[in-house]
Image 1 (cartoon, rainbow, N blue to C red):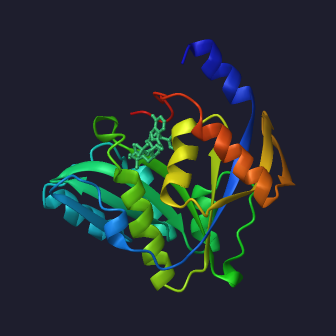
Image 2 (cartoon, rainbow, N blue to C red):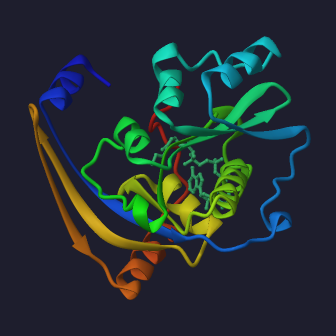
Length: 221
Ligand SMILES: CC(C)(COP(=O)(O)OP(=O)(O)OC[C@H]1O[C@@H](n2cnc3c(N)ncnc32)[C@H](O)[C@@H]1OP(=O)(O)O)[C@@H](O)C(=O)NCCC(=O)NCCS
């Protein structure tokens, strides 16, 4: 990103997002297993666990201490490794404190209804398109279901084709329950949600699914 665009985006940003809901149901792990060997999925809940992974030789060098301080606010991280290489990640908020640490949008999550918020989805560029994030979805959503959660909400920018397709690939029954317009001007933030019907959600998915292959640069490290 050029310096000018960086500067401009710190002053003004606007984009459309899709708001996803996944109703947690029991799924079959075999349907989501990637065809890669030596994978290992770990849920990390504490800074101590994170330090233990580093001591054991797992490569977490892409994350700084500020990121991992999220764990102290109750955020969970689902980490998928190939041998000791970090391959794919997703972050989860299961309570209001964790939510305010990772949810930068004014999206309401009702924790009293056992909802959770998922964000920070990322697959290491060397391992993309191998089904790894689909497996992370399976593992995290299954963990949340077993912990008593009923529904997971998440947000994807409407022009992020890989991330939108990855949602539907994991759960074709998932739906976009609303479209939101986000505007930020200096410190002022504006957020407007427009609810979508099941049919509107399906139309969006059909459109996204028919787009050509796409190489993303979103959040690429
Ligand atoms: C989105 C992202 C996490 C997907 O990770 P991944 O491990 O490559 O995903 P999977 O291999 O499980 O792909 C699942 C499906 O998503 C879709 N998909 C993934 N990458 C795609 C791409 N570049 N172009 C088109 N569709 C893509 C496909 O439907 C794919 O299934 P298929 O390969 O059987 O057709 C990864 O592209 C990424 O890290 N992007 C940058 C970070 C980001 O944008 N995060 C989202 C923030 S909301």
